[in-house]
Length: 81
Image (cartoon, rainbow, N blue to C red; front, side):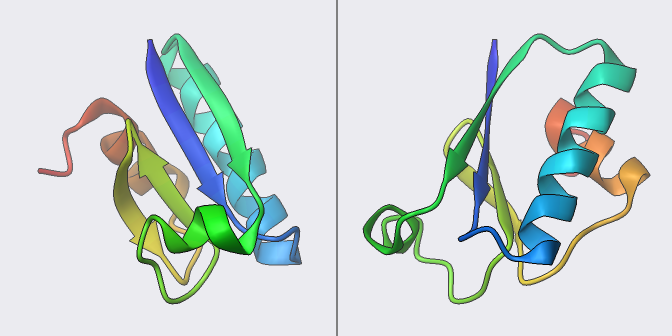
């Protein structure tokens, strides 16, 4: 099971990233756990300078923007390598 972590403090872009990540995972049929990381101390551990951010299995894939649905799907499946 993949672990998808949404890093952000609840801003509109953070909420949009969460919504789109859920949609991408659902469309892919991927079994995953989606976790919201919303404290400064926890976000700092990922060494991101801007939110929103998405980490897949603990690896930051994007930060500072909300990617499109197709890009999110590639990040979730690992096809973005």
